[in-house]
Structures are given as C-alpha cells and as structure tokens.
Image (cartoon, one colour):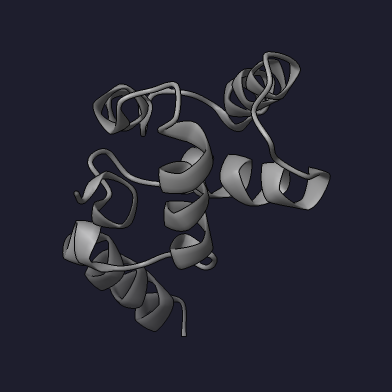
Length: 95
C-alpha cells in the first residue's frame, strides 16, 4: 500500500502545473480580481514555491491593511493556494 501511495504521489508531482489544487479556480479569480489591481501577476508568480505559508499570510494581511478587499475566508483561500502552488502554477500565472 505504501508503494502505491508513493507511486501515486510521484505521478502527481510529475504532472506539475497541469494539476489544479483544491480551490485553485477561486484562488485564480481572487488573484486576478483583487491582487492584480496593485501587482502584476508576474510579481506574484515569482514568489510561488519560495515563500512559506506564514510569509504568504503576512503578505496578504499587509495588503489588506493597505486596502486590498479580501474577507477573512478569501484571505485563507489565497494564502492556502499561493503557499501550496508550485513554481509557475498555471492556475495562478496563466494569462
């Protein structure tokens, strides 16, 4: 059973950017509608895979303090999505 799980995980990791994570559509919509008002998408995409969940949470809460319109639930969606997104994730970075 462990071997099957390991092989399944390896397969999913090999698929890379084509795999959409839970909430990825919502995340992409929030990033496009709420974050791109002040940031180019390339700036956000450059940080994917580099920032920890804690750093994304801090960044998002700072942006809310600067005027970004995100509810508490929306902030959680964005933080969870961006902190788990692989480098160059299509569902965030695709134009």
